[in-house]
Length: 279
Ligand code: DGL
Image (cartoon, rainbow, N blue to C red; front, side, top):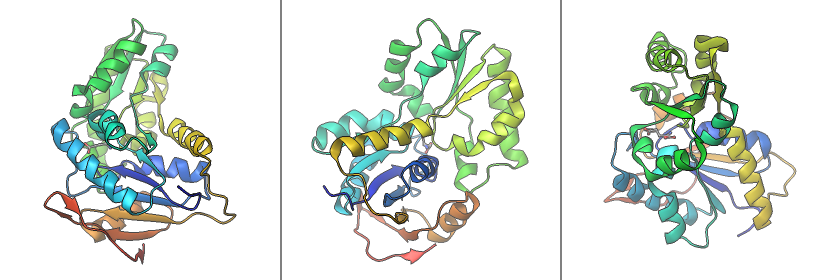
């Protein structure tokens, strides 16, 4: 492992870019290789077995392209495969996501917290174990915001449709007394401004992405592989879906510039890619 290698990140689609943004802000000198599995998005309605299979192959792909550590920038992939990947790749450092129930339980005054996540995340053992360990008597309400992941995939974070999905999901939580809200899906930080506009002072939102960036910094330090270059690191964005819509979404989500390429699934394997085009 060397300091010059990129950080590898992946998600079902563009959600993990919310994590990439935070890491880029905290660690601007790091090169990053981001994989959006848009051929399979959304992960949230798939079986945990399928998501585990995709995660394993994407991990192999990112390692083959030089990733020094892997960030599972996806709650669903973490719920389905974090333990499994650590067992299959014992020499690789993985950073995964789990819903931030602990800080939510510490901050709530009403004793009721809402969690926004995908159906697959709620089904996974990881969610049950986080609630078991950290809810500490606090009531945890769930909401899946159907359709929101698909809107964010298009780069839509502020349309009337997004507002409608959020209203439908948030109002019942607030009515039932939730005063704290956990973003348990990496697509959702992109709609944080709208969540705040709709819920005002009524609910405090916990976005775990800055904490994931700090954890990444800590792991790079522990492994002694922090980038030592002076200039800004290079970012490469890869999608298993169509290239042009992906480029448009990167623009709409105001992502930092980088090379953009396609990596195609064939018989459950990803072919290596070379070169790159400026997006
Ligand atoms: N961004 C993802 C997550 O954090 C997955 C969304 C999806 O593909 O359903 O859970």
